[in-house]
Image 1 (cartoon, rainbow, N blue to C red):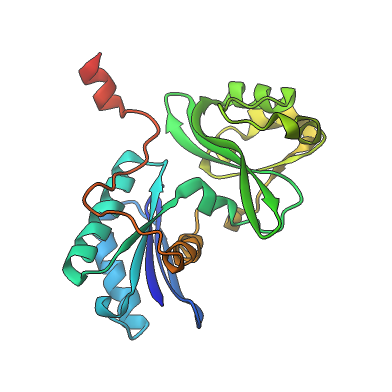
Image 2: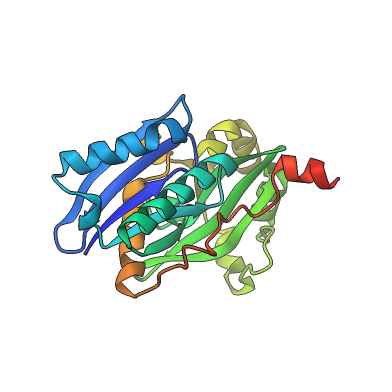
Length: 247
């Protein structure tokens, strides 16, 4: 099975192609100054040509579904829907922050991706490696950085499904922070957590299209496809425009 994955949750857009037998075939990442809509189709065409493949060779498309940039997610999903419609190929949706956590497989510490949510908030979740994959300790949420850090220090991060059984162990551990939010709020994180704040290396500070492809492959092999008609980005909250319109 071959799968083409698109990651447009942040300004660092990317595309990857993988095969369940041959592994990763190709990956392209671009920190775009222009919008994804101007570059995405051209880069898809490029990566397919360089891989000597065509859209018709893909058995599924994977897309990072959010949370993340409202515009980026819309462009990524619209592109995947168009490809799916044209080729008659199914879609799998991959949560952005879960794919991001896979930059750190087998980590002994919890992983906390942070994406800029604007309005002095971050999109975040907390993941712990268990057996052969990541489990959510804290579900995806939009939260102020101070509230997040205070929650982590208290062992009670802001989440409706925080596992209280993990509280004692959680308090004893350092946390790996990654993502644009980790860079933006690095001073605040260090001030609150000191040596318990671990920061990813630069190449691990960005989402990986290859991770979206890998997780998408697992979902596709399990038959976990999404309905392209009803599939929408996972925003977590309304956009600023929607809030102003309703407010």
